Image (cartoon, rainbow, N blue to C red):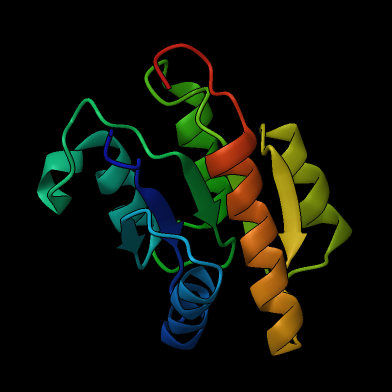
Length: 146
């Protein structure tokens, strides 16, 4: 049995981080989770994973990316992910409170695989996170090397 690939959660709000981790638990998601709390830390997790205790050759199964991040925003993180051959094909799901048409358009233009607005209702949030992870971690067939 192989070790499940990790999920990279890029989230600066401690309450949203805790809520997401609780939603993982409620959905029986056992994949390890690496949390980056700003854009600089997210880039470090992706391009220097050993710093966060992740094997350098082990890419995340999915990246859950908030847009409104300190230091480097989520759109710039996405831009850097797509610009590098080692991370260009990683599944990136934007998970944010923003419903701004400009944010949605830019996210897809930069190569986001999906854009999900965080539901305000707790049960809807738990269900949304469960569906996201079930699809990207359990059903999706990644590209070779991913």
